[in-house]
Length: 377
Image (cartoon, rainbow, N blue to C red; front, top):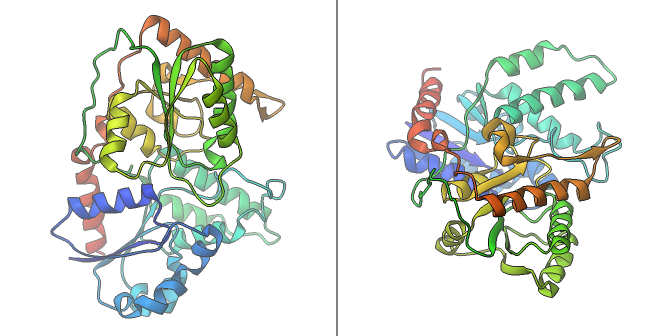
């Protein structure tokens, strides 16, 4: 079986998924095309042009199926490459633009990333099969598409969205198990200092302002902690990170651990295994691969009681995101995180939650059935 695998915005989580997919199915003859994860608005709309310029012969080859991430403008690509229009298409959605926190255009929900949202809708209509990595991702996408279409000046037949929903399922990104040391044994004591990990992309949607509020709350309380703040960085980094670094360097109770992006995979895995707690301040996460990897390596998670996390973890591992008049109260939310950390330091950490269901040996059959369903079309 020959499959064309397309990833137009090949961010770390997207690469993690496609590399695992290829590794798990060596019997398939894979052709993989990717584009770098930069210039999002440009990339999501122009990726067919990028590939047509350099990979036209590859696109025109014969394939039994196409598997593409939702960042690929597959509707346009199918129009430009007629042979692809007749090839069964499986769309994999790591995310959706409808649940992504709005930036400067937040007061105009129609205009905010309209191009990316329309690409997503057209992709879903063109696909034969659609998979989302979480229920929250799927539900927020379907809700967002419905709300957008209702704002259009001309009425759109709702049966279009019904057709999208009928061919959609939930299939998480499976966890690689090369370095799996997940343990569910309770940790009754904690070495001093408490070793905390924050391991997200350094962008505003991962909650750097909440992280800064947490660091300030920890500093004010005198709680002794080591903070390891790591993750992928881009050309522009939120200012909160420079403030966080300054607090850590001047604090007498907070220790600055690892800082910035860790190039070495083995060094990163070693850090995960050394930390006690992984904290998320994310404003949105569709599955939270970075968190799941940390839990797989033995970290206890402490996560917002919003977005995808209540779907995966019990209340024991969630903190309350406080709000006032519809706006998130970051200082109070940071206080809630601090209080939980203080309780855990005094009483001992809970056991590491089981995430066995996300591992490849649990998910492989579902992926195989998905591939086989394409082949039968």
